[in-house]
Structures are given as C-alpha cells and as structure tokens.
Image (cartoon, rainbow, N blue to C red; front, side, top):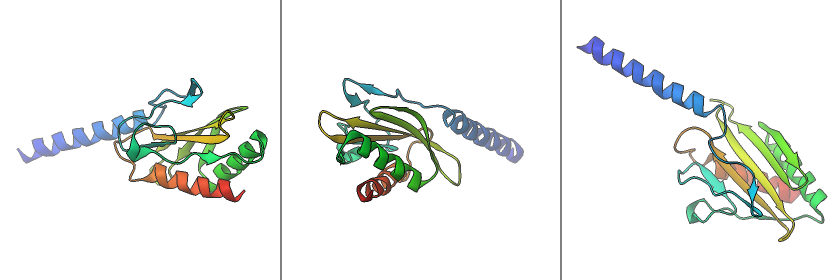
Length: 151
C-alpha cells in the first residue's frame, strides 16, 4: 500500500511540474494595446498593471520624460539595469519583454505602452506559470520605475 501511495505521489508531482513547464513556454494572456490601453490582467495574484480595474493589483503609471523618444530610452535603460529581461517586440510606442527569474527560470510577460495622449508610461506584468508570484511582479515594477525616474 505504501508503494502505491508513493507511486501516486510521484505521478502527481511529475504532472504538476510538467504543467508549470508547459505554461512557462508561452504567454497565457493576450498581448498588445487595444483601444489605447493595455489589456486587463487576470484575477490571479501574479500580475500588476497601471490600467487594471483590480485595486489590489494597480500600480502607478509613470510620467513621460521630455519626449516619447526620451521616455522610451529611459525605460529601455531601466529594463537593462534590472537584468534578466529580454525585449521581444518593440514599436514606436510599445515594448513587449520577457523577464526570466534567476533560480527557477519562470517567465513573466512585461508590456510597456507609451501613452502619448496622456504623457504616461503604462506598465503591465503577468507571470506565465503558477497562481501567486510572491509579490515579484510588483517588486520588479518598483525597481524598474525607480531606475526609469533616475534616468
């Protein structure tokens, strides 16, 4: 009986790890800007956004620098300074990047929209795998925001 329970436990662990690995391979969310806004984030506690309606996940948009180009350059420098972030897509007013955690190599999708109408930098970050991120997306945003403001 003990061997049976041990076997079932091992199978469940393999399935759980396998599910995380698969989810970690590609974004689980729709990306991009729709109607001049970043898309809404999921209700799970592993995401933050400057444009969410979920008060517990709301973070503050950043002010533009002198110009769009200056704002974008400052944000790219902030992302580079944080480390572990790779820009995947970039347009005149949008950056999509993937952050990879150092230890377990989990991926988080980061989107930055340079809202020229309101002179604000909008930010969205969502973990691909897991239910909670232990506050990592918020802490990462705070570090990036501080670096952006100092550039």
